[in-house]
Length: 103
Image 1 (spheres, one colour):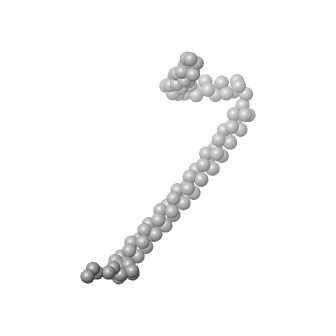
Image 2 (tube, helix red, strand yellow; image 1 turned 90 degrees about the vertical axis):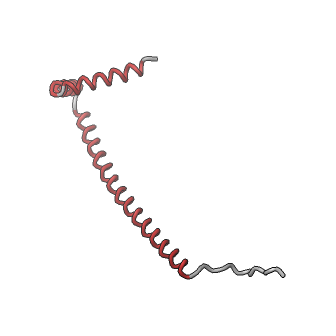
Image 3 (cartoon, helix red, strand yellow; image 1 turned 30 degrees about the horizontal axis):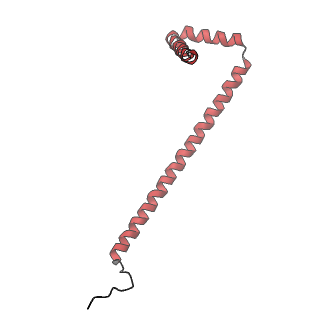
């Protein structure tokens, strides 16, 4: 005669369920820690974004307050103080304009 299977599923041993509960608690704590770390990083990024925005607003206001001649004088003064950087900037701008108008 064939053995009949019971309709009730077999239960895992008590130790296995306890291990699963501990593992689930560990996973939850790890997820909470990751969320807290992500929240801190987001707050730091928001603070940095605010700082950059304020600096950009100040620079735009400074540029609006200057005339073209004053901006040219400021640029020439910068090139006199940092000639290497001035040459590199001019070469970069020339390269970009050359690529732009090449076609």
